[in-house]
Image (cartoon, rainbow, N blue to C red):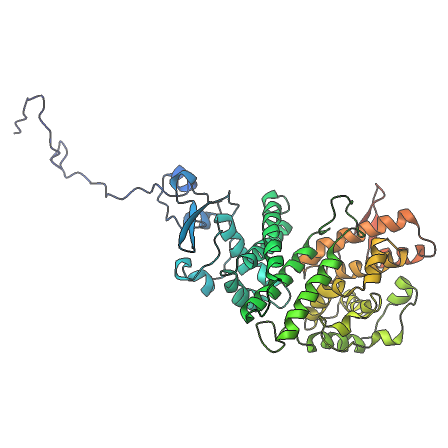
Length: 452
């Protein structure tokens, strides 16, 4: 029998048994997480607080957001011994991959020497996407961009911004309905260009800095390709004539050449800038028979036999840049014919895509002026190039596909509207070969052909 105190301030101690004398089940104590993600909090489950996405959100395919008021949404980076906080932006759905993280992902950031001060949650997601997805879509492949260039970006801020720019642009291509990707690419592009320009003023640069500049230049060139119109002046409407890709590509090429020629046998890019890559493409195109008369149907027999000879030097060097824009289309036409016939050219495709990427950079000043003035012959040449690029890039180079499609439709609309004398038949044959048709509104649209 129990005797309970009747005192008002008496404390009743839990005897650990119920009224029947049975032992009570004790709830195991666990520390409550006050820094977990909003999804785990709403479900009242323990969050492992892993960034940028906790395991529960990751496995359930949920968008993982962390409460900013908890303080953990601010990632701290150190530079020059000073602690700086950058609030994380609203994150998007974290793209997942069944691939295991590379050694770069597995190694904690705190164990690396970091010089990049500004990486929030959204930046980390962009970096993850670049490492696992975007890096493999750029020319030269992911062994270069993921394994060699991405670690350099952790120590060079403007290169990191370039990487985040192209990653955001890739996401914008995959998820066009998500506006924040476009905003992110614009923000990081501004910072990447600023740092890239500033880096060009140095002399006697160490090899690592040379590699960083070349890498940044190539990434920015991919970005310029990935948007329909690049760096259009404020007082001009978007068009082929106002598009800045050709002059920007020429500038990037000049920078890469100047740096590469100083140290042609050193650096990360030595193996990628050798002449044999483009010469291999030229040699292949020389041996290919063509089932369609591209030159005659598209460009009125303006080609010569000399145009089919491969210029000496690689595709970045000066010997290649002296060729006429139309002449440099010949190897591309051979590739288009092979793709259209269903021929397996996967072994030469990396060289074809690299050649196409650099094609605008080799335009002479005279040709650039003709394009700016919308000369009919130059417009036909550009239409032939972008239509060929559209056919080749489909399913192979996301960064070239959208621009090529938009440019083709814009050029066809211009040429149809202006009706340049003597070129109507050429325009018609280009549209017919590449599957462009007029819709009900009278606008040109391209057909997407399934490619093997």
